[in-house]
Length: 413
Image 1 (cartoon, rainbow, N blue to C red):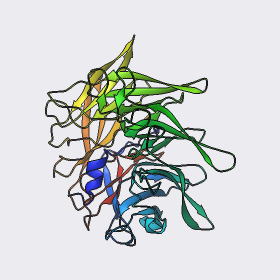
Image 2 (cartoon, helix red, strand yellow):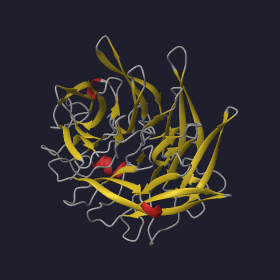
Image 3 (cartoon, rainbow, N blue to C red):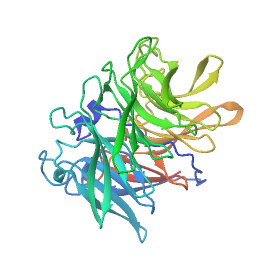
């Protein structure tokens, strides 16, 4: 069972930058626990994705653990995973109890730049009056890591609040994220942070949700960016039928324009809770819903552009058996168009799965379970996976493992 009720209650964990990579052709998937969190100074409840550094290391953060400060369970940590002589070693880079933040609560996706800086979002903390969240940068100087706050969310009509999806980054180094509330209509925003020459960052709201018409409400799930700089995402409500949308925000002559690409409906009587989309090389979009489908345990789907609309095709409906259930965390896609993600429940042992979905003969799509969590190797993954350039998969669970406080894992598919 998850130790962090905040993680399950507040946010459907989300986001990494879309990476088109070549996956390995191993016949038998190989799973390895890289680190099992003890709940002490090494951290507890990892609630952000891992992100790959420039030297093959991984960075991540935890919601709890570290020195006691914000609470008896600690304020969380930023950590590094580094392979040495065939073994992975965890090193705490920063204890958030030392950053003078009000319970930092890092969530969602991290990104890293070519200089080795790491960026993410805190769902809470930030401005001491609002505690509505912040965007942070982790940077190392002289061997010492520190945290810089790039933006404090202030609430009200001019800003977003409680960013829960994390960040994506474009090729120019600009950061993009979403908030489920705040903005002009208090129904969420998509925002951009642009680096200035003097080291500061300029914040701008690209879109405020819930305005006139049938706009989406409260964006959640992974944001992704295509090669043209368009930003894609999903909302769990709003839209033409009130049950959520897939949206695109496109740059044009210095401004940004939102378009609703697809409007969700109730599926077998339930809302579907989409978890973001990823653009494929074929021009289609691929996504997952946490609910919906015949068993109301989630789906994998494809959106195909047509004249004036996008057509949706369900590629897999989760049954809650060996295929898993409730695919929180969204998807990644490789160059061959194979999709990878996590089911937060189900599988052989009931603790969740890592899966791939690929197209076979005659256009038929098939889900293959790559790993079924057993509890001691992690449980209930909710952040999806990322991939390295060789196609190996990496992720975290925020519970399970030797001490029950979550694990970081590697899976060679």
